[in-house]
Image (cartoon, rainbow, N blue to C red; front, side, top):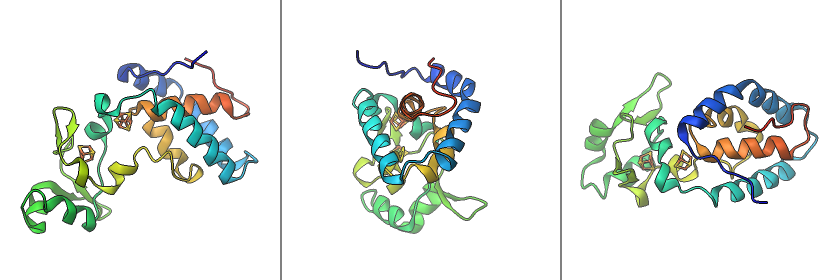
Length: 176
Ligand code: SF4
Ligand code: SF4
């Protein structure tokens, strides 16, 4: 029987909050006690992500574009400024702020390039947008980020729920 995928953003926020402690326990287990190699773990996460992502339409969601701080590199800024026909300093004045850690971020939430729930600069979007929610990268170093992203990203929420059922650990997944 195909596994259910939850996409309702309010329900996801509510359940992720309810599961926070369990997710943090699972995170600690995966980081410190799960005896799998990174390669094996990443493979299981990728398979799980493929299964979830095939059932979720990011263009209908775009929640990450509404809630995340988007870090931009100088390379991102150069790529974004060009099609807008403005200089890098003009782009930075219009669209960039610098945070306390000296990181450059796109100004404002939702992202200024989100139009009608779509990315208006899709072909030129920042690198972090291309790889979000980072589930095809090394899993262990990012576990805390996934616990946080589970509150607003349906893909991460559902992947975490499935992983808790798939990986043998003390807490096991409790389901919804
Ligand atoms: S990555 Fe997650 S939050 Fe972003 S659009 Fe896709 S499902 Fe929604
Ligand atoms: S640049 Fe595009 S993909 Fe990235 S946050 Fe903004 S709207 Fe979303």
